[in-house]
Length: 248
Image (cartoon, rainbow, N blue to C red; front, top):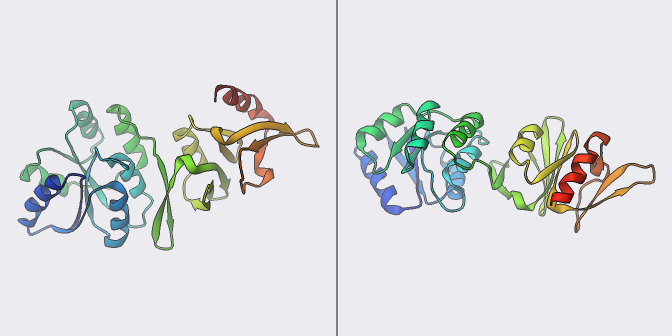
């Protein structure tokens, strides 16, 4: 079984490697000190299981686990954690693999034997039950055999395009394989739906103006490549968009 170790503290990584090096059934194929590095190594190394610390700067363990689901060969996940009993109870309730720090050999090998892939729903349930923040700070794009992380703060809009969603951001456009509904639920505090197929970042909206045919249209701040037709507000969403703008 190929293992990737992810922890921002080197002594913690060394401890895990020391345990696994003594076990014939496991092969440590790499180490990462943060979530972003872990994602790129998962693409390159295709580990079977990732031992994933939760508290890390940048991409924490929960957000990293979310992005793992976008990979073609997503590994199973075992969290390594020093969290309190509330988080541990949430892991137990959802059958999510974890080991408490300081890590013990018997607990680690038992967790590895039961490691499984985690769905987005499972991760959201764990975060809710343990009062952890699950909202991503990046959107992950799989492209050309690799991945790209787009900061949410750089995104102008999400636009549904048949099976995929187009992400318009400061550096261009990308397609992601996620539903607009799930994005609307996750980022409801930062984005507003202007019609069935489009979410706009509230902070990117300058004003609402009338078109020559009497429709309401979003005017964005700064330069944007978003098509004008995607900025028309449907009648059912006008009141909500105005309310959100007043509160922005």
